[in-house]
Length: 252
Image (cartoon, rainbow, N blue to C red; front, side, top):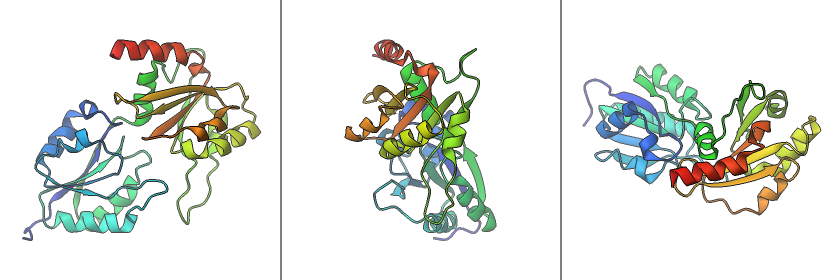
């Protein structure tokens, strides 16, 4: 039944995977939600927090069928006409590689009240899993988050130039393009010996980690990944093998 006044839409950060890394605000909103539109990679334990809500998958995942963004926008607007609390649940933080601005613009244009609930982005969870700080006094004073992915109809971006200028870089959605990433950064003058840490399923018990170098990065194509993967590059990861083992033992 249609409501007299539109409900409110929350763009909620699901965090990197582990349900206990949700913010208190995110957990409260999910528990109160009537309907949740969620990304493909949101962990089932996080979805379970929305125990009373209808849950609808609208995820975008490379190489698989995904819901068109304009259709997601329309579904959010339509849902707000029927429900008091509508949640758009996005992996990590909504405002980082989450296409949040398109949804914010559509909701505001329709006169829908909207609020963003931040989440822990995967880069921070991966650094925690590795036991390695993304910044370090005297070694890393700049960190960039980039993606080489370009959507249909979008102009290419010079992500490699951004990475080349930074002390530490985290590459999202790049595991499938490891060879191209290696070639692009070597061409920009990065050394083949540059340490690279690879983290799959950051924050979860099934997290897996690899330590390699920029020159050997194309070998990543031989790995069969089962979850979201981050590439972390920089001299801060030179000792990541030992530190990751120690961090894992402490957590276990």
